[in-house]
Amino acid sequence: VQLQASGGGLVQAGTSLRLSCAASGRTLYAMGWFRQGPGKEREFVAGIRWRGLNKVHDDSVKGRFTISGDKAKNTVYLQMNSLKPEDTAIYYCAGTTGSGIIVSSIRCADQYDAWGQGTQVTVSS
Image 1: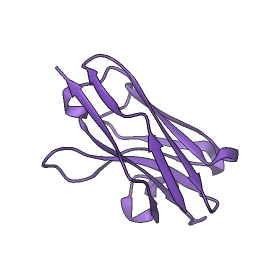
Image 2: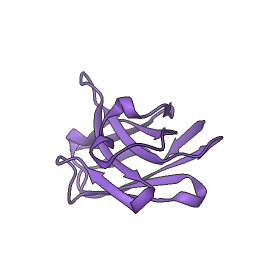
Image 3: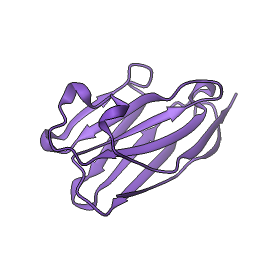
Image 4: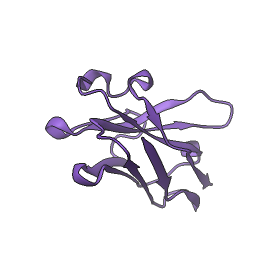
């Protein structure tokens, strides 16, 4: 499976960005976004399981970020509004070929077996 993320950039605080991730190669049953900020560990941002269209957002981004996607296109998006400097990170798209992923596991990085190359998001104050 190959994942191609795009849409990152340098923006000012309070503005918006939309990340996209297109997957090819195999059917994915869930896709998600993770990020790793400077000096920080990788953390979950948002995920979507195609069956049931279950969406999960981390508390740190609820109300500001929204994940969406197109199952037929194996594509997921992350709309990021009201960006803050602490959102600065490399954002990684991930997908899982595991059909048994449950909603409570969407935020777990070890559930994903395909990862994109990452796209840099920098938010200036």
